[in-house]
Every structure is written in structure tokens, then in C-alpha cells.
Image (cartoon, rainbow, N blue to C red; front, side):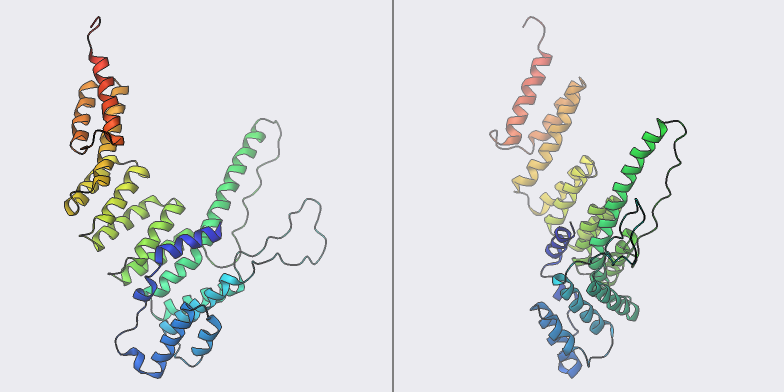
Length: 334
């Protein structure tokens, strides 16, 4: 599960990290600046130990601390998974064995460095993004474990309610050990990065992916709005936001408005026109199911504006719905 989530994060920020953390012009001219850039290159090349050696003499500022964190995070990628602690004595009967720690030691070191970087400069967006990306898979795993626990507790409560004199419900488990890897903390780190860097899409994309995965749909909605604001003349964010509204938020009217804006920039995009047609055709089908014939006819007329090919999926669906509507309206005996 964690590996798959890390892949999602990597795809979402691919090619963007350098832009988000690029040094100011002329910074490479100093010895410290050269060390920073050489360390950055070594990390990108998969040489974290060499990068850490390069950073030994660098000032402990936000950027150097962040790069040290990145180096340790890179080391964590190939480090073995944590194992449960050894037992000092045999477990009591029925007791569960101790679980393995959530974090690898290399991850803890990276997190410590990211925290120092953000403390040194709270507006340093790359460190906020890196902190969020490190914690995100742990937050999702803990969230899913809690959901599973709640389902199991609900089932156990049902069984207890069917028995008389059953034992009381067990207390909830203690909070997980280790650093705060809550959903709220990840969201806050992404928010701070978004505020700190008004031009980049990296943190916005990261928040969208995480918020959807965590079920924080209001956060995802706000992040999509921010994405549209940051790329106003690009139809792609509008289309993606529309897909989110119609598929996840169940807001087809909102999706139509966004798809229509996208068509202003890309008026010949048959794919987007098909999305609008699909929405109107689904509305027509729902009206037909409720014997709302006039409304169904109105939705079909709206869909027709976006269907130019009768043999397309939308065109074929429209023909079927029109035939169904005609059959319903045909007088008896005709």
C-alpha cells in the first residue's frame, strides 16, 4: 500500500521539484552555493551518502537542512522495513505481539531535518512539500487501519447487543507511537507550501492527490479551485476539476460550467463536448425514469448541442433515449 502511494506522489511531482527548490540567481557562485547544487545533483542521481558528505560544511540554513532531509529520505527508499522489537519475556496468553514501528530510522532522520528546515524558514515551500510527502503514506495507512478498527468494533457491538449480559465494549486503542502523521498535519504542510509559493502547481497537485485519497473532499475541492486560479488559460485544470465534480462530488451542474469554460480555450475538443453530453443524457434518462417527459426532452436538446457524430457513444445513447421517449408518448393503438 505504501509503495503504491509513493508512486502516486512521485508521478504528481515529477519534474517539478527542481523548479520548486531552484536557488536564487548567483547563489551557485559561493562555495556554499556550489556545495548545495552539487548535493542536489547527487541526490537526483541516487547518491545520498555523497550528497550528505558534500553538505557537511554547508551552513545549517533551511535549504541545506532540506537537502539533508532529501538525502535521508532517498536512503529510506532502499532501507529494509522496520521489524517488531524483540520480546523481553513471553507474552501473556491471548496478548498480541508488538507491532513493527511505522517509520524507518532513515525516515525519522529525514523528518527531523525537514522540521528543522521549516522551523528555520516556515515559508520555504520545498521543505513543507517534502515533509507532507514523507508523512502522507503513513497518514493514509493509519487512516485505513482506523477505518478497519471501526468496522470491526461495529460488528463486535452488534454481536454483543444480541447477547444478554455481554461484556462491555473494549476501550479504543492508544494513539500510534512515533511522530504525528495525522491527516491534518499533512494537509497543513501542503497548505503552507501553497501559501509560500504562489506560482508552483507542485503543492496544489500534492494536496489534491492526498485529500482525495484521505476522503477530505472539501480540501480537494479548494485545491482544484486553486489549481484553476494558477493556470487560468489552460483547459486541462478545468476539465480535471469538472471530472472531480461529476465523479466524486456528484455535482453535474458544476461540472458542466467548468467544461464549458474549458471549451472557450479549446472549442473543438470533442472529448470535453462528450463529457457535457454524457451529463445531459444521464439527466434525460433520470427524467424518463420518473415520467418527466418534458424535462427529458429538454435535456436531450441540450445534449444535442454537443453531439456532432450520430455514431459516437453519445450519439447512439441519444438515439436510444429518443426512441424510448417516442414510444412512451405514442398514443395507444398507434
